[in-house]
Length: 141
Image (cartoon, rainbow, N blue to C red; front, side, top):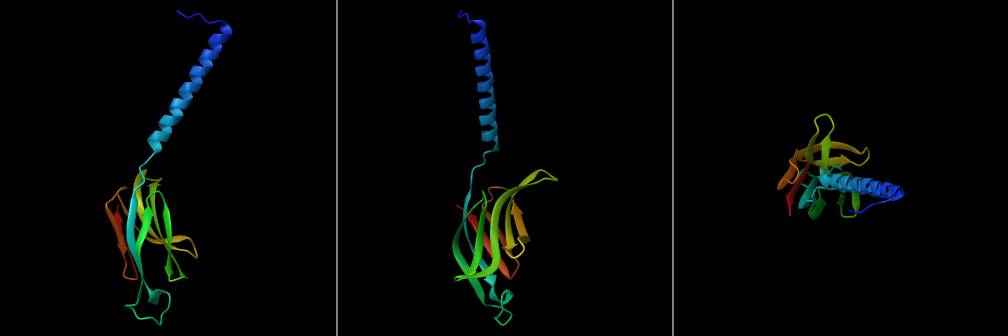
């Protein structure tokens, strides 16, 4: 049996407390960790939304867009021109219900408001929006 002096016992107790705190902290981080899912997809935006003189069958198409459910915001562009819209993919937890969902949203960049969204179970294989003027399709990689 090891015998410690009074000051050594205090040090051993303090080290034990620090070790317990570190273990608790690492455990909490591990509990909060979620695997990040990667998605690939496409975005279609009707040009008539931006310019009333355009035909209703004239669309902007963006292909092979990469998203991560940890939070991705992709600005919709027509070539190099900004459209004022963006697509967001993010996992959110609603405070009122404590329900966690994968949210795919259309963002109006002038206000920062989400003008529409779809939601699914986190890790969903496919997710999409189709409101005619805007369409988004994502597939988990």
